Image (cartoon, rainbow, N blue to C red; front, side, top):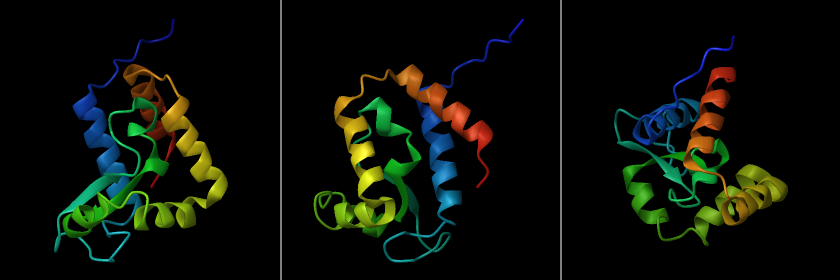
Length: 123
């Protein structure tokens, strides 16, 4: 008999992905190179948080210091887009964009995907 796993709450999933992203990016801002604990580090979503399919997707998040986060928040089709294209390459960028615009994934499905991803991934 397979044990039923309790799905994380959204706030818990947000904390888990934030920890993963900061660790993945070595607690270093991907834009300016400053490190915590000298600056506050935020997980920045390229595509907005309100779409479940990309909210917890690692390709959609970057560790960004608070100062850079304010600068790039309204430059998502400018410097942040250029950065994501370089970081992911055109194919992965387009796959992420398609996921954002076309996916009907529920929050529960997105959290299940995150739980599976984090259980099989090492930073």
